[in-house]
Every structure is written in structure tokens, then in C-alpha cells.
Image (cartoon, rainbow, N blue to C red; front, side, top):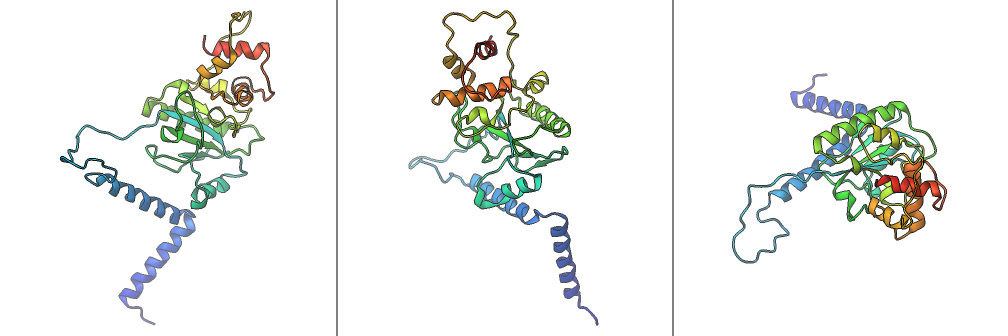
Length: 268
């Protein structure tokens, strides 16, 4: 049986599509990503833009502009049981959740969204006066169900990624924080097993001064200090637990003399 040239071309195209789908289960998702990015690009090209409020005068496009860049990195655990499960969750439109990076237990890093775009990872959250962390941060998800330690291969990949992001966007060391820090009433990730001190020693995040022999000032106010660190203290119990989880690997409620000293040491 002879095949026409058109039939051969069609067959090859079909095989190419089948091969692409077989080798990359997210080929269709990647196609949808490109469509959405192109839609945003068309919106940016509009002059004047759709949200323009200038009813009089002329649109004058300035030449002095650049892309908005991230200024925070928020670290999460996935609370799921595999990287494949997380990737699927982040590519289903109905979930409305996403992150810029997912790091598997074996150290594999999946980049899911351009760093300049806004992922849906932080949710309702705040840190200091910043009440829209999604718009100013990069979200990194670590494949971890929330009840286990973090693999050394995974952490090594995280350290390399953090170093790249810190250098690329000039992110301040103090702006590497956890999801549980910015949303203490809803989240506890990354869980208490996460090695924040190791991160600090590598140049990411903050740590406290040695508390040996420390004497607290008589007027020390732990709630005000929590606020100065960055916590939302409207739910004081949640803020205290989040602070102790991050800096003391402690998940108990309430302040102790030692936790008060650690908190004081964060700012001194």
C-alpha cells in the first residue's frame, strides 16, 4: 500500500505528538502555560493599557521600566506523598495552587513558573507590613508529607537554588522564611524538622545570639518583639508556636524563659 506525501506527513506528526506525550506527561500543561503567558504579553502590549484611567490627554509610554522582581523566598513542604502527586496538583486548574519550584526527595528540581510571575503559594498571609506575599516572593515546595525529615540530596539542591536566587535578585538574607511564619494560623510548613540554623549558616534567614548568661531587660515585651520580627500577632498563640517551631524546633504552646531569651536574641 502506497502512502501519499500528505498521509506520511500526517503520520509523522501524529507519531511526534504521541512520542512527546509519552516522554513528557505534562506536554499539554506546558502548552497551556505558553498560551497563558502569551495572553499576558498581549495585555502588556496594549497602549493605553486596559486599566488606564486617563480620559483626557495622551497616553505617553515611559521608556524607564523593568520587570518587577521577587524580594522574598517562602519555603514550604508539600504535605503530599510524592513529587508526581505535587506536580499533578499544581497543574490542575481547579486547585488554584502553584509554586515556582518543587524539589523532590532525590534532589531533582522542577521549575514550574517564571520567577517574575505570581504563583499561588502563600495564600492569606503577612510578614511585617507586607500583606501580599504572593506578589513579592518565590515559592519553593519541598517534597515532604510534613511528618518526616528532609533528605540531604533535597537540601543540597535547595541550598544551590537559594544561592542562585539570592544572587540573581539581591534578596536580603532575612527574607528567606517559611510558610508557617507568614500564615501561622493556617500552616506549619516547613515542619519543625527543617534545618533553619544550617540555612542561616549558609547565608539565608536569621538566627539568634548566644543566650548563655543572658539577662532579659525588665521591660521586655515578647509580643511586641514578635511583631518586630515580622509575625502577625492577632492570634498570639499561633504566632508563638510559629516562632518556636522555626527557631527552636519546638511545637509546644506558650513562652518559657528560654524562648523569651531566644526571641530577644533575634533582634540583638
